[in-house]
Image (cartoon, rainbow, N blue to C red; front, side):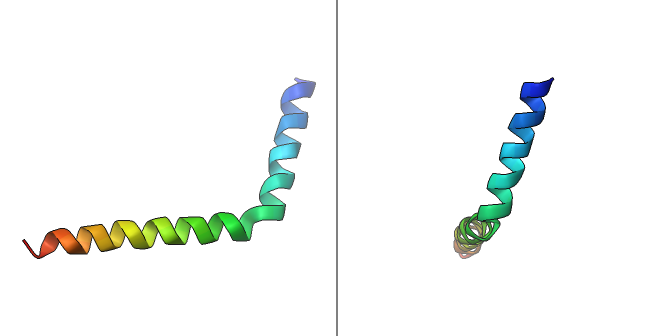
Length: 43
């Protein structure tokens, strides 16, 4: 149980430090997915 708690704390810290990078990557993937969807509408 202690290992799970420590792992969760480590993951939480990682997310706190890198949330802007994660948001940036998610935005890029979202834009690519939306572009692919819009591209299929033309056919």
